[in-house]
Length: 360
Image: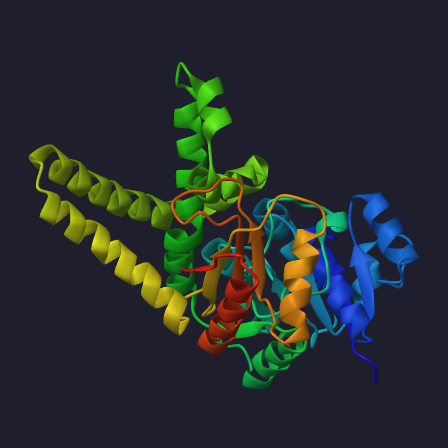
């Protein structure tokens, strides 16, 4: 029998899930308070329903709650009408409060498996989504202590079909790791932008803001409403991470005031080594990617020319970024590859064509 999948929330994450599962041939029901999202998904044949009603989920085998934290907490108790065997999961980046609510409010709590896709964009909404969003992206699953093994296996297999790299973990580990690697960086990005906004010369500062600043603060373009909920519901772990980060900044401040260049260099080198190791062996959230930059003239057709060159030699680009300013390495186009060998081959081709590539 064909599996039926229900998705509550058709924004970036939910809309992308719907597209991915629909493409694979699953029957997808989509629910959203935004009727335009539902109508658009129906017209695109991503979902089978043309109106929004929770009761449409009655026959679903798996239900995804792709909604913000507070909405998810409100929805969980409202799902007791589902079939006892229905698997329920969410996509919120905090798990403690979510899992506790599921245990207390769901009749069949053992079939609730917390979920958190480690992917996304600054822009939200159904139109921003696409079916490749989860491909090669890590995806946390947090089963409760009584979750049947076959239920976890079933959901894991379903997510792997859309390209996700599934990590089965526990609440404590998940919330601690996400506080350090996701929630704290967002807090820092917002705070850095606030600091710059308060500068007397903030207009000039914004005009001159280049690659490094843009990279570091990119995530501050995310929804403040969503992130206020995320930070609040994981506040204890986020507060611990903030204290740890303040400690690192104070250490650096003291080294600067002491004027010892060697100690400052050693401090920075420790950070560099950690970041380099992440990129090389794929530990943590980051996939192992091998980067280079190339100096590409700013004129029409150059991007197509470069990507076409690599395509002719069967070199796959895993990630691409157009840098806004020439900072340090002189490149304006950053290309990432899955293997060291692909990067070296791309380097040679680009060098022959005069693009002056630089390994990163």
